[in-house]
Image (cartoon, rainbow, N blue to C red; front, side):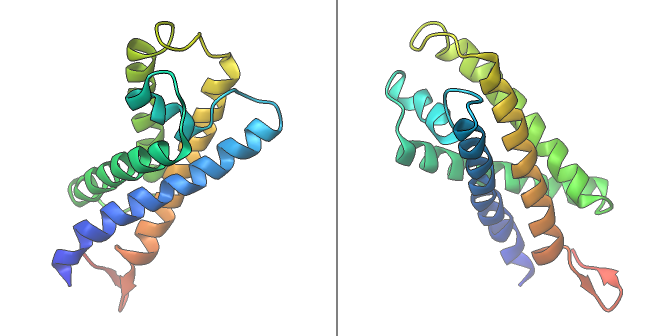
Length: 150
């Protein structure tokens, strides 16, 4: 069962991107931003044709990788405050992704995005990280007989 935890961490990371997409869709409905998280991420492949399903695929893969990195990072830095650490990791991953988007596609293949898009992705990434932290605490590092398991 212990060998299944990295796989479970990757699955949690991938599925946690759904909360970020829901948050970004709500903010889009409120008039904040132009692209949802999945649509923006799909532009890495399509360059100028946003597609929900390609964005879903890319986010599941990247979210799974972030979940796996988070799992091994937690083994090094400890399990205290998992939810806060998850939010931080989610926001750090989005910062790295924004640098890639800005340098690779923004301004060359798509017009410059409104500033609301950046806020949308920051809030979405916090939702991703919080969801991932909560799921890690519930399914991976849960208490068994008063002590956390690794």
